[in-house]
Image 1 (tube, rainbow, N blue to C red):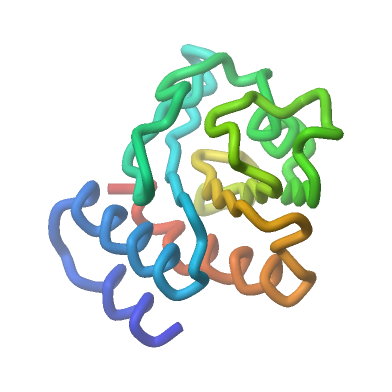
Image 2 (image 1 turned 180 degrees about the horizontal axis):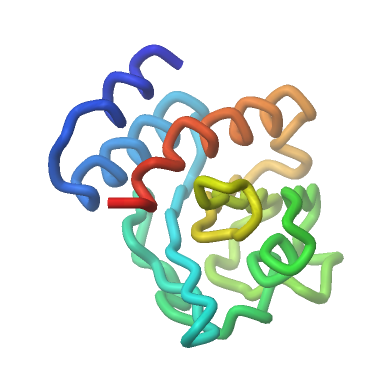
Length: 148
């Protein structure tokens, strides 16, 4: 977590910092894909900022109500799905994804979801309670990057 704090505390380019975070998270957890998204409530869209993995997201921009991300935004809670094929909310991005977790990033007040962390794995049930807690802690650490 110290490396993440150091990454976020350096004043610099937001996109480059978030790219570094996505790459750090993907390599540390051995995940197939990590994406970070902005949530634009006024335009009612979610937009990819950066990603790390095998390819660009299938849906770089999509309506705020769609998919597992839409569920995380509306509930203001992490959505952790161990087998995406069994969840009708899942937007198929990569045919090899088995499990996915969407962690909301909140504004400074903790009231509004301003971003999301999206992590995908080829392994079913890849995100234990410990991993979910770690990703939620990461969300709090990177929160300042949504105020720049």
